[in-house]
View 1 (cartoon, helix red, strand yellow):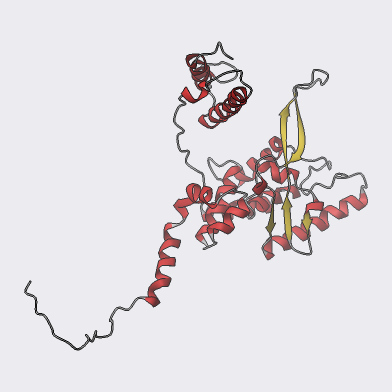
View 2 (cartoon, one colour; view 1 turned 30 degrees about the vertical axis):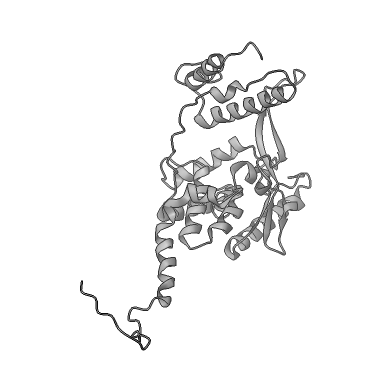
Length: 303
């Protein structure tokens, strides 16, 4: 570590920004990934300083490319209606997960990891506690390079959250569960792990496979340039448009701080801000009562 110079790390990040992990020209890592790498290195060098191995954290001398603000894809209300209809007409019952995500804001991995044990049908809530993703294998004894795992939500404590269900969504969830229970009674080994959204053979979805189902719904609904994360953006935008408090939206989204929500979805607030300001109108006196001065000498001022 003592032999490293700032220019060495700068060259490393420059290469990753232009050629990525596979070192292919034009396939660089995203600014967000580069920032994550830098933060991880910074922690490592700080630990080295505490242990007396080095005297200066050269990571502080690194400059990363500026993160370009990505335009969020939010479905229009017409697109949202068409997507709901396409999901309901899908031959696969699990397409209901598209509608579920659209009205809860859950992430793709969270949707695939959701189990019935985390759904409280009495309280009409779902508890988000895990995420399902494909991870790289570093164990040489495993033949495949990647495997799909369900793990506790890795982001922050706020990611583990409880989401209440609106009545219409709850009613659809009840019907969906009843249909799934009928299959389980007929085939006891079906969906043994109790995932809410499973494949036709009863196996849990991996995110990549469920995205295929989402794409089929999007195609049927004739919606261009939308990915699964668009459902999450659309949920937050519609919630704010309907006047939901930003603090509530942040909790439902699993954001650590409402400022994160404000930063991402400020575009949805102008009309709501005007409505909020108009509510102060009753406190404003357009014609104030005449002012009666105290008795005493008066002073006339020429302007």
